[in-house]
Image (cartoon, rainbow, N blue to C red):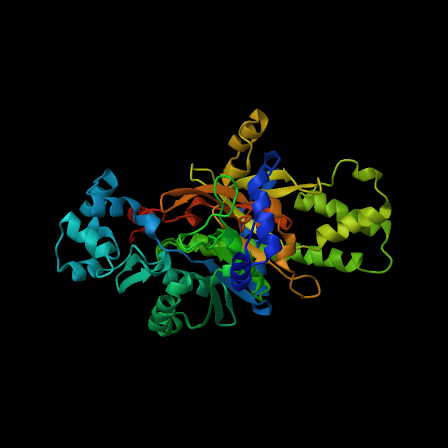
Amino acid sequence: MFSEKDLSQIAKRGSDLKIVEEQIENFKNGFPFLKVKKAATIGDGLIKLEDAEVNEMVDFFDQQASKKKLLKFVPASGAASRMFKALFAAKDEGKTTEAVDTFVNEINRFAFAESLKKVTGGKTDAQSLLEGLLNPEGLDYGSLPKGLLEFHEYPDGTRTAVEEHMVEGASYANRNGRVRLHFTVSPEHKTRFKALIADVKKAYEEKFGVQFLFSFSVQKKSTDTIAVNMDNTPFRKEDGSVLFRPAGHGALLENLNEQDADVIFIKNIDNVVPDHLKEETIKYKKALAGLLLSYQKKLFNFAKRLDKDEVSDYTRQKALSFLKNELSVVPPKGFRNWSNEDKLAYAKEKVNRPIRVCGMVKNVGEPGGGPFWAQNADESVSLQVVESAQINFNSKSQSEIFQNATHFNPVDLIVSTKDFKKEKFDLLTFRDSKTGFITEKSLTGKTLKAQELPGLWNGAMANWNTLFVEVPLITFNPVKTVNDLLRKEHQPK
């Protein structure tokens, strides 16, 4: 299938030939659907914290924070071009729509209105505004990442999404005055991110009395997946070389794997609000982190006891019961007939895993994964974030279970990636490689099949210990299209 030239190309890009061959097999065989047992609902796999419990967890986190290495991890790669899809169509093809009319009529309510006026020389006709916003000689928003766009307006100026994450980080990822933030960025945008941060860092450090420590990483080329023709042969570019494509947010598992922290807050770049709405977000971030640390303490205690040369039946039973009743990890059918040695090995394996607490909001019809009880490769059942692409909608029962989800995943995670000996887990070993996605794309007019790695909060974390917690809707305010910035959640008070 591959020529010497292909093999040289694969080696040069840092890809593993065996993995590339596996990817081609995945195209041929497809990925199996995930078998969901039921939706996780409040009281059945989904925790709803009472006000007193929220406050208790916030206090617990505040007591622990100074002893823990904290990090805020923000996936921020990719241009914001999808945000401006309707505007591009209007600018290039004259296709005006309601969205475009709203944009033009409400132009003064966007935080970037002043910057736009400068580049258009004050012109307010639709074409001037669209060109000024999107063209390289204007603000060039069409090719910038969301993190660098002016999102919110304040009396003393505007803030980009990156700056809003800095402000948030100062409130909950602050360990003794040091705030660590990590952004995953595209190689072509890294310089712009660094320039923006260099520009604003000092002012925010003075305002919040903290020191910001930034790090960046880019999606590794070696994680790109091979593209194929419709007959599953490698898709070739015009120069004859094999086409590899970025493999979706699941590729960022490698970036996360390289971080060194005790508690990592994960949230998407566009999910930020102005200061007057931040209080709930900060409170729940701390509450979820407190919950993570309280469960971690129990898991570490079990891990230590199970690690001894002699483990009593009582300890094994207690660990198994904790896994089942507190962490929703249900053993496979026939487990009661397993030998004591096998039960102990199972308990050890399930206790010794990375932990994640996932905030879940009530389902308001946004696209995205939801919280479910699902069957794993080893036939145990546990809590999983499941996307619609993983569900077999030809099965009436599976389809009904998916429709019954009351909540969905806004990408609001707090994770712990170290074991009880304070050593980092290798996160790649906890990924379920059979939970990737296949999509149809096109290049130069030719249709191709592309493959995404298991999603970062889906299959990439399939074998983690998981807790689902309801969080208020106000903590979820993504900006998918430019007009989302007109929602009251993104406007000044």
